[in-house]
Length: 280
Image 1 (cartoon, helix red, strand yellow):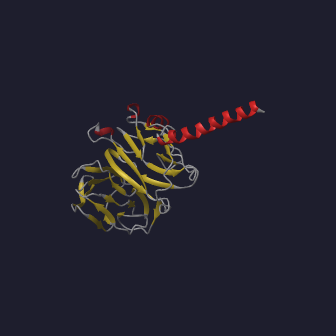
Image 2: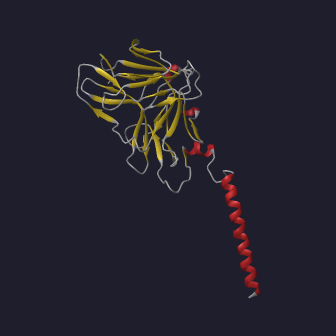
Image 3: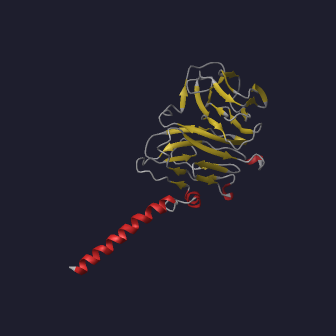
């Protein structure tokens, strides 16, 4: 009996020591994946048993498509940072999987796509989508764009508000229309400088540094024409922009990009979005 009690005390102290060590491991992040591991695996999970839902960044309207990149591609989400390897220049990378923070009502996904100083002829932007891995949640972030195109933006998404159509159909007209949402009637929001060109000709220009709204923009164009959207950062603390949708004369709508803000690292007066979209 005496030997048995001594054996039980031994197991008690082993268990007690383990309970002391585990919180220390968690507190020092020894129990979370490293950045290097996340980048290697193209995924990173923030353990939260209350929210088993994973999200994926992928490259097309079909499920699990690779991401088409130009010169370089960087994605940031809280502590998770992915930078495309040099071997993927002018190629593709696999979809990126991550677990969002359940306690944040509004999530922010940051992207830096193409250094404007690197090989302009390869600086294209591939189509990007955000999807729920276990649910039907699907959110288009940006339409593909021709080189030279660059982005330094943070897209904002709210899982409670973003269950909206990602394709649209409105009444037809004789013109193409740019609008701020899928119904074709919302204003376009810009904070900072904005210039829109069609085949190099300016069709809209806004130099207001403070938050501004302008009504849907109508213009004539032909399939294959190139629409350039050029946004520069103001010297204010926030540089927000709305989603932008392009509607064909038939009324068919295509989302060009989701709403968000310029990345904080971009200096005032510098471009944070320069995108060349092909008119469908």
